[in-house]
Amino acid sequence: MVTPRRARRLAPPARGLAGFTLIELMIAVTVLGILAAIAYPQYTEFVQRSRITDATNALNDFRTRMEQYFQDNRTYANAGACGVPDPAVAGSASFQLACAGAGPAGYTVTATGLASKGMGSFTYRLTVAAAGVTRATVSAPAGWATPAGCWAVRKNGDCS
Image (cartoon, one colour):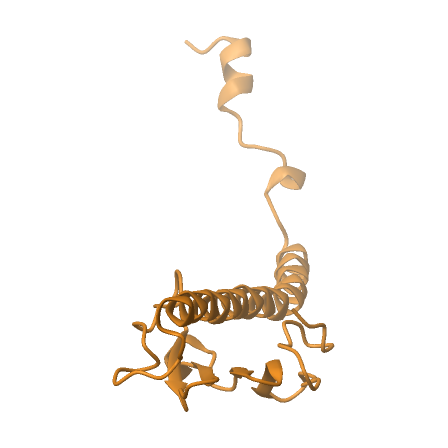
């Protein structure tokens, strides 16, 4: 025998409590798609900027080590690659450093982005010579400003 109280619990739910309609679900998916379309490019640009910072830090670290070498030897020239081992770019290793033209009074070191890490369009150069220190953004992807005399770290051409 079923009591009236128990019968109310076993009754099927009312028609209005069935769940989401197809329209509501499509609206939610559309809103998520719009948010993802806005957020993903911002995220990828943020990742690129963090990797650029790794490269500029590695170039500055290389310069510091070259200055230490110069203090010890009174020249930048050496039989090896610029006298000091090439430092690895911290963290993601998104750039490869190469030193060239080391002579008694200066050298040039270049950080070239690795395409496998999404940084293939970026190239930065540091030149130390008797005339002074020069920083240059040699190449950047389309849409990025490449100002003269500095390392571009943002699309708008802000420098480090």
